[in-house]
Length: 277
Image 1 (cartoon, rainbow, N blue to C red):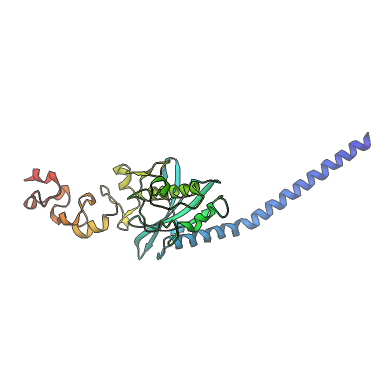
Image 2: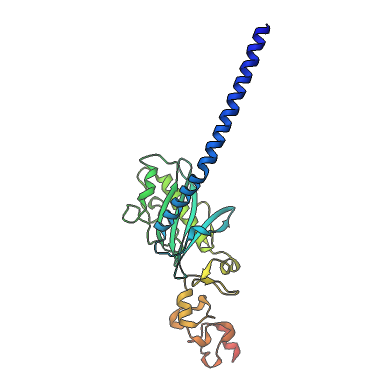
């Protein structure tokens, strides 16, 4: 009996020793590889950003912005050239057939899709995995140049404008939802989780989004795709909502500075202008 107890004790000691040594080795290896893995991931991200938003001369990955929509956090990597905003890459995800499908989508400053990179997925090899190239320029489901702000991207089977991956409709729907969600984060809008359709956010949220014409938004200034043309036609104080070039007059382009002399209804986009006569 004593011999048996001694054997069990020795076995426990040996197993404990092996466990401690193995744990220490794993910890050492993890510490040894942590930095190289982080560097590799950072390089992969930088390379992906360069693909989806080419032509920048800053380092978008250095200081990403985050925005939370419906409890989901999105990372936005702004790209500039010569100090001027040219677009952004947005990390987004959706649940595909096999699990989370993570994408990086590049948008120009008007919100048009430049390109995308499939960062990670668990889709079926040879089927859903085709999402890596299917929706790229020249692909069967090419989405480049499309603007989800004009119409949310959906597969043709659902009445949309994008051809789904053959035998992988679920993956295709998830991918397009991730793209729509990315656009919602990019434009500061709210996304419908089921369809990926977007709704305009509150005026306050819109005014506080990224940048207008490459510079931070000023208080009371709306920031949208019309900003550049609006400034060129009407000056700094122009409200983009009234910035149709045909109707835009420098003197009467905002409510505060409407020129009484130019306050004919045909010329003045602001109805309140008439009250200033």
